[in-house]
Image 1 (cartoon, rainbow, N blue to C red):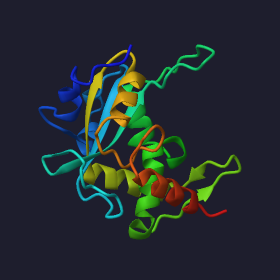
Image 2: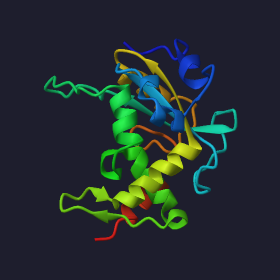
Image 3: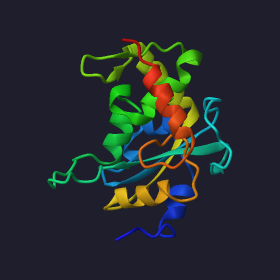
Image 4: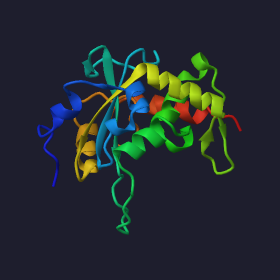
Length: 192
C-alpha cells in the first residue's frame, strides 16, 4: 500500500516547530524510540547545494529526508533501528562511514572546514575524531529536524523522493539533479 502524502505530510514538512539539532543533542528524549521518517532542515548550508525550489521554514531549507528502520531485507531480516538511534547515533554522533548525510556534508564542507577524509581498508570513509566533532558542531549550529512516526517509513520516503519535493542531499531513489554532482564529490573526497 502506498502512503498518501496528504496524510501526515504537514507533520513532517510543515511542523508546528523545527527541533534545532543542538536541542536534540542536549536532550535525546525529544526523539522517540519508534519507527518513522525524519527531515533535515539547514540554514547557512554549504553554498554548493542548490536550494532553489526547496521547502523553507523559519530561515531553514529542507534538504534531506531519511528513515528508521530501513526496509526489511528480502530474507525478511528487520533492522532494530529507530528514530532516536538513527538521528543521534548515526547523524549527530556517528561517523561519516555510517551516515550518508554526514558523508555528504563532510564532502561539501571539506574546503571550508579543512576536513581530511580517508578510506578504511573496508572502503568506508573516515575522518579523525576531531573532524567528526567539528562536523557535529557544524550540524548543531546549522541544522534542525522534523519527524513523524509510522510503521513503514520506506513507503513514505519513496513517495517523497519521487514527488515534487526538491531534496538535493538525497542520493538513493532521488530524482534531484544534484545527486550526480554529490555522488561525484563524495567519491573524490577520500584520499587513499
